[in-house]
Image (cartoon, helix red, strand yellow):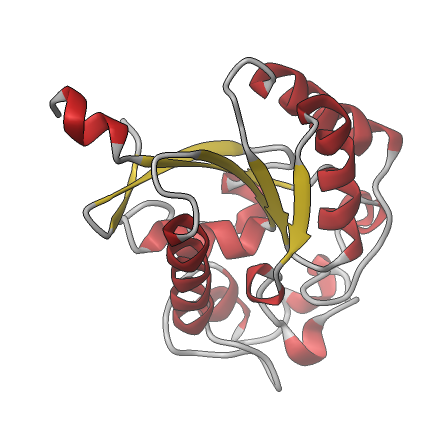
Amino acid sequence: MNQEETNKVTTIYLVRHGQTEWNTQRKLQGCGDSPLTQKGEQQIEDIAKSLTSLGIQKIYSSQLGRAVSSSKICQRWLECEHQQVTALEERDFGDWQGQLMDDLQQDPLFQQVFERVNELSPPNGESGTHCANRIHQALLDIASQHLAQKILVVTHGEAMRCLLSLFSVYEEKNAFDSVKNGHLLTLRLSSGQLALAE
């Protein structure tokens, strides 16, 4: 990549929110919500500190409370505007939301829905494929507004896992095992294409 091309690249730092109360209880959150734990707040503060020298110009997040709380911690360190975007919310797990993972594992659909990214949906919920495409489009839309800038996006574990399946990563794992709280990855948008940074 030459210097002219480098100047046109938009960098997205994509992070999962900090640990929540339901995470510690192994409850499936989805579009439900629970507050950050003290550990979760520290996880996000550590991430924010590590990003202070990068020149991030804006923070975007899901509108769910745990992502908003994580973003506000980042705001204190990065000193830039924060905007909520509904399309960045967690995968909708429908009837499974708020239930214990150990109980859900008895459901015959669980492994195919929770450990794969495909067209299958939990009862009254969203498929992994739909979630992946939704997050991907949201990031494209955001990045198109910040050409050649650096932005931070705070979202959710399952949403990130589904997105990563588009890059052939974590196709057969679950978010508890593959995308930990505070997990940070870097994507770059160049010539209209979103790619994982090497």
